[in-house]
Image (tube, rainbow, N blue to C red; front, top):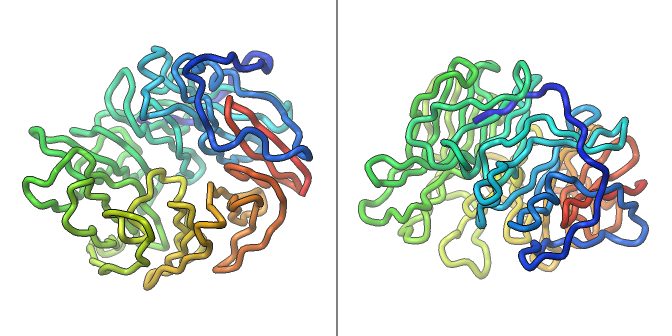
Length: 365
C-alpha cells in the first residue's frame, strides 16, 4: 500500500514509557547530555507491550519530520491490532501528529519522495495484503500488488504516475525477488522483473530490498536468501530505452560475512540506500559505502560504525557514524555534531535524532 499526505491528527501529550517485560532494546538511550529531549512519540510508545517502540528512521518533508517505528521481526502491528501509523513531528508546533492511522504494516523503515508526494512501502503486511502508502491527494494505501509478500522500496519512473516497487512474491509456493510497476499512480500493478534463482535453493528470503534511481537509470540488486550459491549481479534498467544491463560483480567484499559478499547485497532497509548526483550510498554492517556506477568504495571502517543517513533542509546528505553526525560529500565525511545518534535530520542549524521508546532529541550544530 502507499500512503499520501493530508491533514494531521494531534497525538497525546508526551509520556513516560512503561517498563514492560517486552520493552525493546534499541541502539540509542540518549545521544548525550547536551541534547534536549523533545518528547516521545505516543503511537510508538503504544507498542510497548509488543515491541517496536524505537524510531527506526526519519524523513524531512518541509516543516515535518516523518518517523517510522514498529518491528517486522515480532509483528506488533498484527499483535496489537493497530497496524502502524504514518506519523510526523511538526516543527512549528513542536508536537507529534498522525497523517494516516493504522497503516497495514508491521514496521515503517523507509520514506521515499515521488515528485511532490511521499511513499511508504509496507515492508511486512499486517492485517491486510502487501501495499504501498502514498500522500497523493491525502494519505491512502495502494493495493492490488500481484502475489506480493513484502514491499521494501518504491521509486519513480518516467513520470509521477510511473511507479516501481520491489520486494518479494510467492507464486505457487515459490518465493522470488520481485519488482512491480504501475503506470497509473499505484491504482494497478503488474509484475515487472524477477531475479532468476537456482531451482531448489529458494528459502523464502529472496528479495529486492532497495532500488536507486540515478538519472534515467534504475539500479537494483537482489538478495537471494540464505541458501544462495552465488551473488546476484547489480542490474541497471534504462527508463528511456526499456533495456536491462547486467553490471557485473562490482563491489567490495565485506569482512565476517557468510554469503553477503558484495557491498550492495545485505542492505536490509531501503532507507540505508540514498542517491546524491551520480553516486549511490549504501549503509550496512557498520560501514558506509559509495557506488559510482563502476566501483564501490568504503568510506568508514567497522570501528567507526555507520548507523543511519538522511537528507537535511540544505539538501546535503548526513550520516551518523560512531559518536558523530557527518555531512557526506563525494567520499568526504565532515563532522558537524557530536553524539551517539541514530537517524540525523539537520534543519536550519539544528540536528534532530531519534532514540528508543519513541524518543526525539535536538541540539544546535
